Structure formats: structure tokens, C-alpha cells
Image 1 (cartoon, helix red, strand yellow):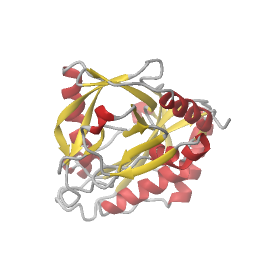
Image 2 (image 1 turned 120 degrees about the horizontal axis):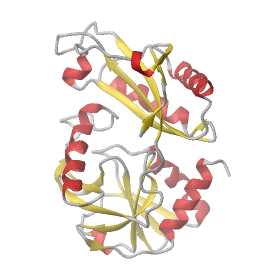
Image 3 (image 1 turned 120 degrees about the vertical axis):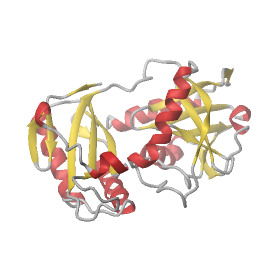
Image 4 (image 1 turned 90 degrees about the vertical axis):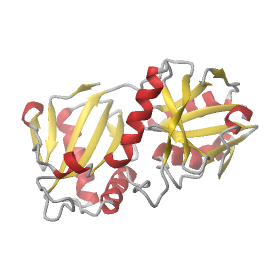
Length: 281
């Protein structure tokens, strides 16, 4: 990933080398940061309003407000992209509690920053990805803020991703704390059964914006959708599996723990439809 040379930080566009954060930031010590990853296609940030709305909601889950409201954040992002004059990029928005020593973070200033990077979808040229089951599980919703996109929750994803790559896989597949199929480290999972797309209920992990885009658009492809609790063994019973997310876009799953999964045309159909959608075709 190659970052652009200018970042937006607390209302100012700065050279990247001048965009610094204090080592005493509450977020650095206590994982109090929320963020969004947005893809920009043809100069347009896809589903910008939804991403920013989720950022605001994530901050509320962690007990702090943002320095700007959602509408103003969207306007600032659009202005920042215009200054960069980029066509396609990956945009990271992050908000965090700043300088404070107390665990509760009371009185800590809240900072907001945007950073654009050249980061093509990592598996765009692959015919599928290889997953491995993680020893880590998605936690119960009364243990961490599972519906927030926050650094607190992503520690598990980091550990699972390291575990998977050490085993030679591309990513890790999670189960929930009570043994149901969940997601991968940074994307959601769909299983194909005939002409039905099945995805796990997102009650212990983040239901992504790409996932919602597919659920909303499947009917136009003559596909049915079903959100339900899914047994892990159903991964091997399905006609096909694919993962989806802002960073990944849509990618078929080739294998799980080196057990090759079957393929249909549906995964590639959804993938092509999604690419046409994000490019406004």
C-alpha cells in the first residue's frame, strides 16, 4: 500500500511527514479508535454516506462524539479527494481519543484524519483465495463492542491473519463464541446453495457495507438471499463460497484448510455485478 503525500488531519491538509499523533494518545494505550475503509472509483467514494454514518455510530459505541457531524465529514472528504486529484484509491478515515492518561478517557480531545492510498484489491487477479479455520473466535456481544468498527475488535483479526499466513493461507475463517460460522478477518462470507445466497446473521461481528450491497442487489441477478445462523460444516456442503468487503471487493473461496471447494458461475457473476455497480455502470 502506497500512501499519498498529503493527509487531512483535524481540518487541515498536511504533508504526510507532518501528520503525527502523540504517544500519550488514549487510543494508542487503550484501543479507543474507530475507522472506515472506503474505496474511491473514478473519483467517487462508493457508499460514502453509509461509511460515515457507521463511523459516527462506532464512535457512539465507544462513548465519544466526533468533532464534525456526518454531513460535514462527507463534505471534507470530497474536498480532500478533489485536492488529491485521484481517480481510484483506498481511503482510510480514523477518529481517536487523544492525549489523556485516565483509563476512562474523560476530557480527551477527539481527533479525525483521512488518508488516501494506492491499494488495489489484493486478490483481484486471483481465481480464488485459500482460507484456514482460526483458533480465535468472534466474541460474545456482551464482552466487546462487536458492532463497532474499532481497533478494539480488530486485534483478534490481526492475530488470526498472522496465524493464517504462517500456515500458508490467505486469510482466516472465524466461528462465533458459540460455534456458528462468522466471517473472515476483514470481510463477510456468503455460501451459495442453488440460486440462494446464504450469509450468517451479523450479531457477533460486523455486517459490512459490501455485504449489504449484495443483499440489496441480488434480486436483480435473479438470486434469493437468506440471513441465518450457519453451521461451519455448511461451508463444505455449499455449491460455492465467496467473501466480500470494501478492501477485498468480491472474491471466490478456493479452499478451506486445503480442502478444495466446488465452484459455480454465481460467485463470478456477483463479482462482475459488484464491479459494475461500484463503477456506476
